[in-house]
Amino acid sequence: MRSLDNYMQNNMLFGMEIKVCPTNIVPKIKLGEAAPVSDEFRAEFDAWLLEMFGTRDLSILPRGKAYIFGSTVVMRPEDFCRLQMNC
View 1: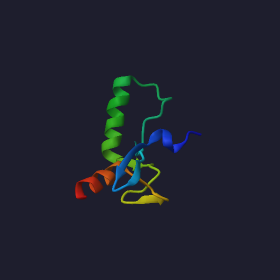
View 2: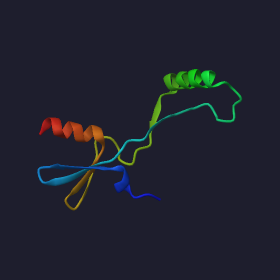
View 3: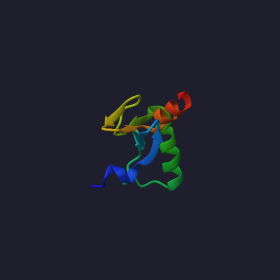
View 4: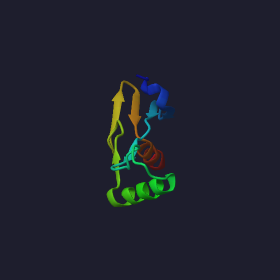
C-alpha cells in the first residue's frame, strides 16, 4: 500500500501546512470488459451510462470536510481553492 504523501501536494496558508488530497470520482455503471463489443461502441455506451446514472465519489475525504493532524490540514482540492479565494 502506498503512503498518502505520494498523492498529495504541499501548500502553506497562514503558517499551517495544507495537504491537498486527490479526489476519486468514477462512473456508477460501466460496460464490463468481457463484453465483446468494438471500442467505438464501448465509448458511446459508457458515455450514455454516465449521462443516465452519473458518478460516484470514492474520495478519502468527504466534500466540505478537512482533517487536522497537529499543524497539518488535509482537504480536497475544491475546498482548498475556496479557502484561498476567501482568505
